[in-house]
Image (cartoon, rainbow, N blue to C red; front, side, top):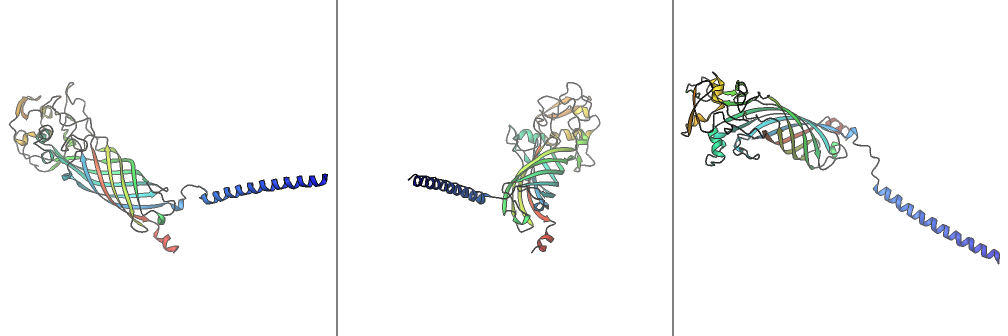
Length: 352
């Protein structure tokens, strides 16, 4: 009898053991199945063989935002002065969503008080119209930006997505040189021999940069601005795949510059007498005289000569503002980009 009881106990314990083992095995199998279903391979970054390069040709439209815009708002521009630009880029795909792009762009900016200002707007437009300044500026820019795609591509260029939005940000250096057309006559009424020609404004020092200003003068201490400047380019775009090795993109970007002299306008008027014998600098500094306004006054300049100007313009005063130095100039770049993946045509044919 005792033997039968021991056998029964052993059988009972064995059944419990096997049942527990089976349950453990079942749970382990479930865990393994889940691991197999979610396995994505060992993460090792973006392999070098998936990286690729491309060259881009760009057609651009430039718009200027600054002191010679139609209104004082930072968002004000005259789309009638939209100017073309062309560019060339080299792009390196370095990650599933990340590329590095180096570019050169050449284009121009332009603005004109006489053509853009609304003289019926007595608060802002009339001031700009009577100021009567204008410029053009040819821009040569080198930039490097990081491009971030919304949709990733973990594989080669052949597997890139059909389309993706993207953003970019980086740094650029550009050369600029604001110019304006020489008027027919100077303030003294004498005709200019080079009337109608475009002339560099920086060399004239239209806000007193090369004049001997005195302490207490509103622009005292002003220095000539540099033709080379830096900017922060940033923007958004969308890229479409045309075929295995060609893409088409549309972009809108902003260049935040660190200069207020894209238009040669930033601070106050200076006494017209500080220009001495340089009648061209004097006439390019204050151009309201070309309008023939009756709202004028006459004052004796520092050189002892008399000057007749529109009230509020062309005279040394804290209230006689030529521009607004508190805001730097910016410009926007609207781009159509044609991209061609290089160095891949041979490999594609080889493995077909």
